[in-house]
Image (cartoon, rainbow over all chains, first blue to last red; front, side, top):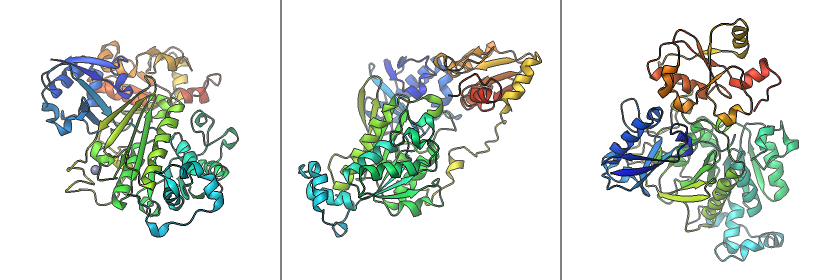
Length: 93
Length: 388
Ligand SMILES: [Zn+2]
């Protein structure tokens, strides 16, 4: 099952500047982990040391936060778009 | 439902009726909405890129009391996007030039200046006098502080945030919708996402996001229906695309959930890792002058410029090898652990992440961070280089 990850600017430095990256996986978690395996520099930005997803990144499958589905166990059919939405802080300076 | 109760409403003068006639002609605003705007008290935290358009539009719209909170001074590099300040305001407190511009647009506005850094000690005391707070800050600790104070006081938090070409906007803590912590329970470790100062920002982007914040603030005050609560608006200025994602209140949210664990404002410096002593090995630094000395002496050094090529073109560093931050881990084998490696970027923040990334691969050689980055080199060593 191949899905497309939409990479926000804040993380693009770790995907060679790519806006979109495809990865295989039968669940959101599996696809994310395969994606991180292809771009090892992004790993610390996605996962805590213990392997949980970092709390400043939200993962949306289509328009739905996977928190409202089955989290990283949410199954994939293939062809979905997964959007990573990190906290960004800029605004004043 | 407007948060401005009827007992606070005053009549509009004939001058005000003329000034706001284009609002009064909208049935959704009308005399009633304009009177609520006149009675409203809005706090704008940060009078920078986002705060500028928020303040200008709220002043023009007739918001009666506008609080501006900032402790910064106007710098030349602000003027590319912070349109409330002008060239002759350079070196003035941002709150002073913001106040002058607001008064210039609308002498009827009551401007309250909070020339202070918000912290856990003063935030509730400042916030409690306002109906709406707009978040136009540039750092995580203030964003979490604003969120928590707004949740505790039951004030809507009109949120906007920007990064390079991308923006986010939402209204937190309103209409039963989520708060910022429902979405992001905790901030990234320090500097994992570089600041605007390091990352750059398209000048017009905060204009668009800040104007959305001003719009939502006005709608909250007049009791408009389609408020951006429970929705996160994503904007990409480069692709010119808007996207909207549904966000829900999290029953496990540490502050607005069913069993909150946060009951008072916390130490946000520590929470955001800024003063956190994580037990991690400290990062060794080298000053620009020390580096110059070692270079002149002919010490063997691996000098690594982690900036992207477009940034190196602004101010090149002599003799550095280019390895972008995003490739550090996978190019670890290019380093020689017997030779000191010096990492540099614009201001010496991203280079710390490069050092951490390389350490994370198990690299054992000595790693040094060029303190204050290429800008320090331009100040201390090579004055012909521009600071940026
Ligand atoms: Zn919450």
